[in-house]
Length: 274
Image (cartoon, rainbow, N blue to C red; front, top):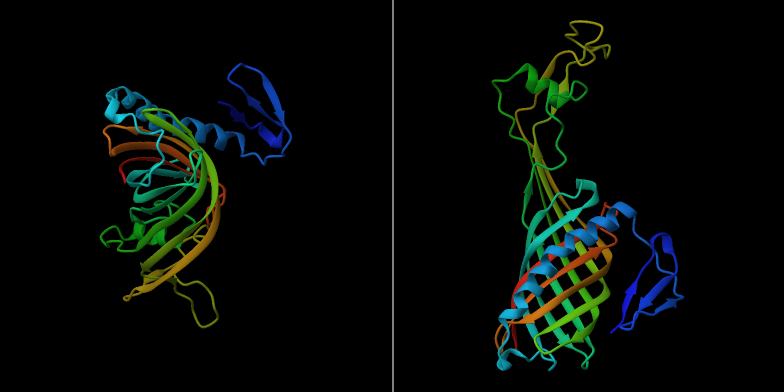
């Protein structure tokens, strides 16, 4: 078995063989930012380690079936993180299917839905330069009912190399998927009061650049969809718990993520082998 290692900054890659020899691999591989790469590697460890820890459970001969390629259907749950959010983990659910392409290769296709996230990209409370923040600081008896809602759906098809053993298989591969972000919002617009000459009304001092603020009675609403193709890199492990039952753990790295430079998803689930 050989393990390919990619260097930072698009450096030459090497393949470490089972006997310890290092063989140069001449393809140029675009690298991830160092901080993102470190987070991707560390974030994927728990899911993979969990599956390895479960491997002793499948000790009976009836569970030793990973060497035989079969179609597998998985129910998935997990978390994903993006660089723009500072690596915060957010929950997602989904499903996947593994379609063997011979004994060493397979097509792995996942569909995941991020749980709805409310009030994203809102103004910061207490910001003296923001109209909304200043209005609600001046009127603490009024309730802010503005809402912003977002959900990300992802289709992750990929081709993976399978390293099969009796009770578990390791996979690694890449693909090209699609992500869709549904964004919906409603808010009450905050307006400055101007006189007929366009001057700000109600300024209490020279430092007061906003003057009198009023809130609209009705809500402004809207929604939009963003779609983006994504290059996917992934790895993980499949462990047989019973003749037809398999547990899966892995990590997916999405190299193009709507308006964000990098995202990663830790995946865990259970599946059935047909």
